[in-house]
Image (tube, rainbow, N blue to C red):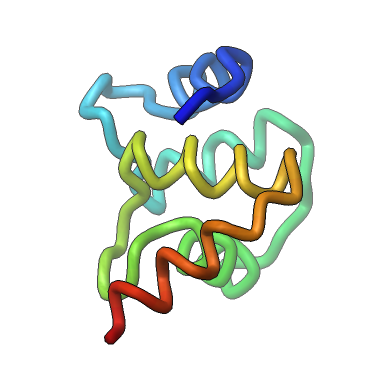
Length: 86
């Protein structure tokens, strides 16, 4: 899949420890740096929507895939998720 390198750089800015995942703490810190005033509940929901079901962290692959899908209005993400649940 072709993707935008800016999205990869954004991930790297948020992934403070270089683990190739974004934890809840890293996401909170990034949102503070971006001066977004979100409640803990809003941050948790944001994390849940970016992560794979049942995970409390965002993988590099999921971050890029989901942001690229939203950025390009690509409907294949929904089809992929439906296939995973079947």
